[in-house]
Length: 294
Ligand SMILES: [Zn+2]
Image 1 (tube, rainbow, N blue to C red):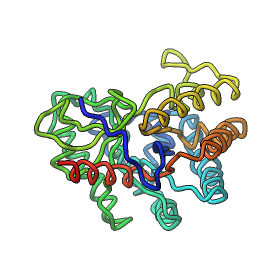
Image 2 (cartoon, protein in one colour):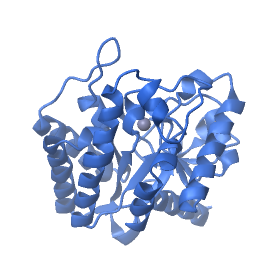
Image 3 (cartoon, rainbow, N blue to C red):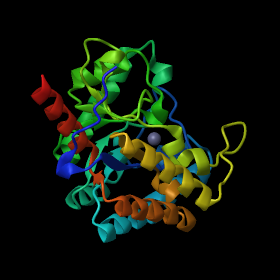
Image 4 (cartoon, protein in one colour):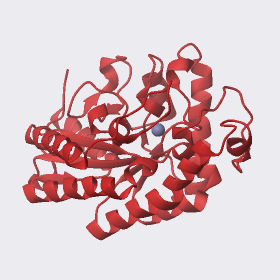
């Protein structure tokens, strides 16, 4: 197992990536397979949840959480990476165009936040979803996204190869380290980089409240979450790795949770040895480093 632990740019000791998954309503509602999904979102209101609850929680993320995050990043002068189910790009193209204009990275996150564990026997369907994503990114943002994150981090054994075939430079869905590594550990023919994640570094693990029988996070004291994230950042950066924080506008956007994010950034800044970067920059740097060493 080969991990990249530096050297990092500007003589920094490790990287910190702030990432935001713009799931909106898809965090709370599920698309039935094979459903017809009009781009105006009327299906989200009328068919899928059969209630306004999940849809309205998504709208909180879109109209309250996301602007709050973007203001915070602008005030701090920090870059971030936004993973987006491409159906949301179809619905709200101008929102994501403005994120792009602000200098942030946009990356793929399914079309309607499909569960890849359920597609483990249907790689053709999974490949079609990737193509739908690429089409939306091309049409509305005029880019091919460098990065991918599987919805709910549920990858299957086919996924790495499909990502490679679709031209992705990196993935951020798997758990096998605290520093970048190659997905060849899952499939020897795949060189897509993995920028690893963990549930402990995800706001959903602490604050995504779903009614039973689904999972139900207990709400946590923000000071407790701040201590966990800061200890992980110190450990990961101290070992030359990449600290990847995953947040959701509908979740982190509440006032007491934005305070955790602010405390984390202040803590990282105080260290003085952290490279804040978009994930595509980290992936490009690692690839360059490995090519130079080869
Ligand atoms: Zn998601």
